[in-house]
Each structure stands twice: as C-alpha cells, then as structure tokens.
Amino acid sequence: MNSLSSDALLLDLRGVSCPLNFIRIKLKLENILSGSILEVWLDPGEPMEQVPESLTMEGYQIESISDHHEFFSIKIRCS
Image 1: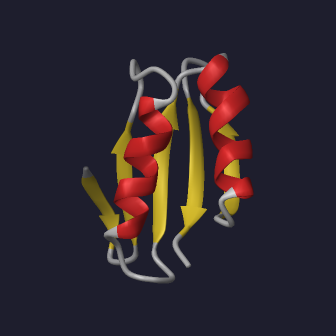
Image 2: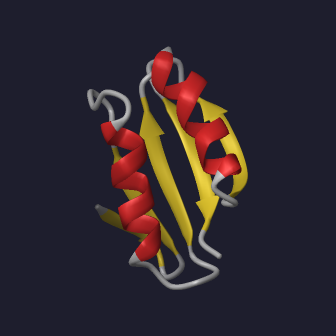
Image 3: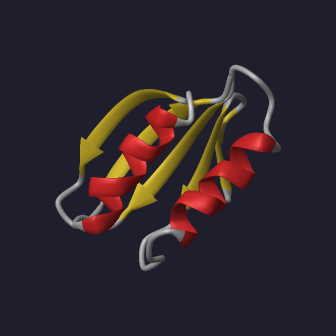
C-alpha cells in the first residue's frame, strides 16, 4: 500500500483472483479512517465484473472507475 496523499491510499490487487481481491479490499476499508479514499487497481475481466458490484451491495460508495488499458482503477470512499 502506498500513500497517494493525506486522504488517499492505494491497494494494488493486479494478479489477485476473485474472491480474494474483494476480501482484501473489505479488510483494508475496515482499517482506514472514515471519509478516506481507497484506490484499488484491478485486472480486467472477472475482477471488474464482480468487485464494484459487490462493494456497492455492501454499501460502499464508488467514487470513480478508470480504465488504464492494462488495469482498472477504482476509487472507493470509506464510510
């Protein structure tokens, strides 16, 4: 995990399969301050098909999803 700014964190989960990537995201979100932004990097395919929907179903707010050609970046606000 790398700090992007005082209120943003990065979790690189490229190469991590489902559902392990979702579990790691949830564990990280449970341990950061409310209002912080967690940026997660995911592979295309199944991770992008499953993770954003699962996070939304769990009540997390997706701030943005960006396509970087080889991976996707999802910004999630911790509530």
